[in-house]
Length: 243
Image 1 (cartoon, rainbow, N blue to C red):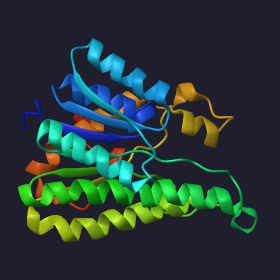
Image 2: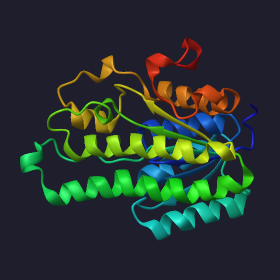
Image 3: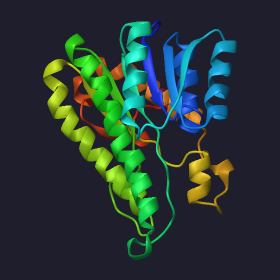
């Protein structure tokens, strides 16, 4: 697949995996729409892409605010005609606490962003993809969204919800030729990982650029290989050239 001029919307594009993906897809000639809550990080990513000659539209917003999400998607389609790829990457970690003592306010925030926000973005984008009968949704998941782990609380639950959401979506959009693939990147050198594992040596973790390369591979491969549709993959499931 030729990626030049394809439109990619990436949530959580201000840092970590989202920023690396934005830079990688832009280097392939894609038009990039990114959103993030932090204005400094968001426009930092946009500046890097623009200085490299890429085309980018930054949107400062919280994906849990539905009207802002709808405005972003509508503006992107109005400017560029379509959204070819959606990368659901934005999420918040929340505290490390047992369910019994988990702060309700923190629980509500994590679920609001990671579940509701991802739903709002996905729904708005899929509604533009279905009439075209073309588009790919890639979502970043976690191992704690497959097997629960003590003290991961709302984050773990939100990733279980993401897995279920994408499985449900995959069945629904298959007749419209859309592709849905979920990727668990594993340990990656990001700020969220450092917050979750403060004693971990970051030099032993993979760079976000490696995950971005895997997402690029899946974006190109999903349309050509129907067997990828609906799959939830680990990095180890991908061929060496994808990593």
